[in-house]
Amino acid sequence: MHIDRNLRLSSPRARRGIGSPLTRRAFLGVTVTSTAIAPLLAAQQTALPPYVPRDWSGQTPLPYPDPDIIALDPRFRPYILFNTPIRRHFTGTLWAEGPAWNGSGRYLVWSDIPNNRQLRWLEEDGHVSVFRQPSGHSNGNTFDHAGRQLSCEHGGRRVARYEHSGAVTVIADRYDGRRLNSPNDVVIHPDGSIWFTDPPYGIRGNYEGRPAETELPLSVYRVDGATGAIARVTDEIGAPNGLCFSPDYRRLYVADTGSGRNVKVWDVDGERLVNGREFARLSLPGDTESLSVADGMRCDVDGNVWAGAAPGVQILAPDGAAIGVIRLPERCANVCFGGTRRNRLFMTASQSLYSVYVGTQGAGIA
Picture (cartoon, rainbow, N blue to C red):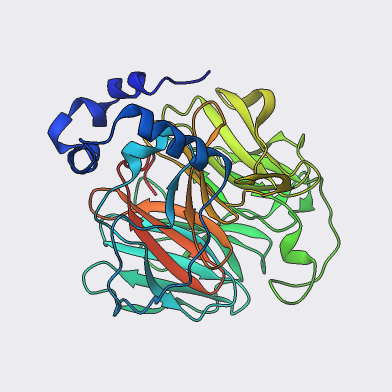
């Protein structure tokens, strides 16, 4: 369903009026007529402006608004803050993945899969340090409602939970008596259940894990938070990768980086997934013949899906339309919302960690 631009004003952000990110932009554009804006919006929907290399050291001033935060559709404009830049916080990983925000600790943890380590960025002063090494070649990470970290480990072919005591609890490493392939990404449901994807990427060689044979169909699983029972919720997907719930937890989105090359969505019916269907098939903006594939994903409170996908991050409206782009110089594997107000998008992209403030907040807890 297409959401009219005026209907966007019914959102919690837009109802706040003066405090919304539109205020400053509207002030700067009050003399521009609607007839002048229309051609600009049409151009944004069909092609991106040329990419201009920039100085990521933070020493060279950047004109606002940031030229690499781009609206493809009017629905994305409220999420663009006029006076904020994309920032690079760290570079030096081999393949950055799995960002997760710890609210009580005010830090971000993420994985450097080939280097078999996790890194931590502190909000207080931007300090980056090695958080865990070895990390079992961890990929996706999250935190549960008790503040405990969960990680998908390629090396152990398992989902692990790191307890406050320092002990490690194995959440899942087998199903139906056979070893999992290489758990990839993980999310938490309010009922305490743990949902994760299990593609083969960590057992294809020695770079991101250890070579091994696939023992199970590529699937999505649910682990009961009370009993620990593991159930396969779907194997109707080529290679399940990133996943996220909608803000009301009634839908589960899963990126297919296998044969499907799309994003699928299911309705959540208690412990089951039903009514699986295609949610979006991405392309490079302005080039519908060139496919772009989503990797890690997170939802915001308005139900938009923010997906790591070329040329950086693509933002998908609840109807599946690509409405905006955050362009990066590296391939972005995953994203999460963090910061004290959950309005800062963190992006793990190949060798680096980036962030940018946006005009919304993340849904969920990590």
